[in-house]
Image (cartoon, rainbow, N blue to C red; front, side):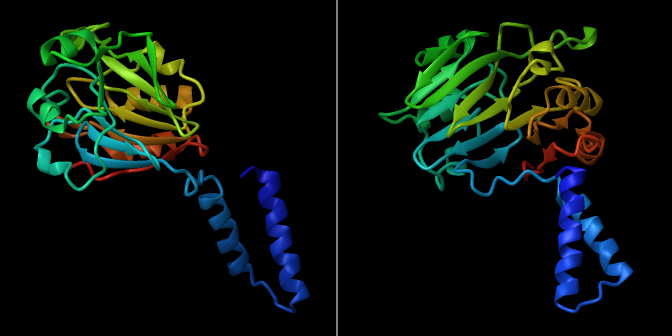
Length: 259
């Protein structure tokens, strides 16, 4: 909410109270101003038909009224039995915390479409290869493959450019970015009109909280879901990430239960 709208709203509250014969005490006015500052910047998505269901670490489900997308399913099949069956499976890359052939095979159904980079689909033996920069339309869902890779010298061995995919999924008129395992690459920074962003941050495999913050503040998604934040020495400081990003009050950070 911009300052002009907040001032008008505050004036309306004061005038309305005067008409009703109420006397707004200074403390009450301070509380109202505080609430406007805290909540006035929130993006409201209650009317969106899209839901996000965290499974664990890098695995989650995206649903709308009719479709269900499973992202990097690697858990035991029992983790998915309570949810709508998958129409699409997106696999970002071949590492074991993102790709488990046994799980994918158990999730197969007659209507399922599986999308992944070449090395994943080659090992799986079925599915559709999507390379960086390519896109595919499945029904009314558009899927774009975005590069994911490391930049820092001592991390280059983890994710080579062209071997894995991030994704931008357009679904129910919303654009959803899934980073996969990456650092703050230019392809991320150049993203436009992202409604929801799932951004990784764990060491030594992807990027620091500061790198993730810098990228998010540049491409300005409306809502960010930190995910994939468990590294070899524990968890990244998600509260610090939330605090750093809060300099742009038009970006909401939502913390889901991943672990």
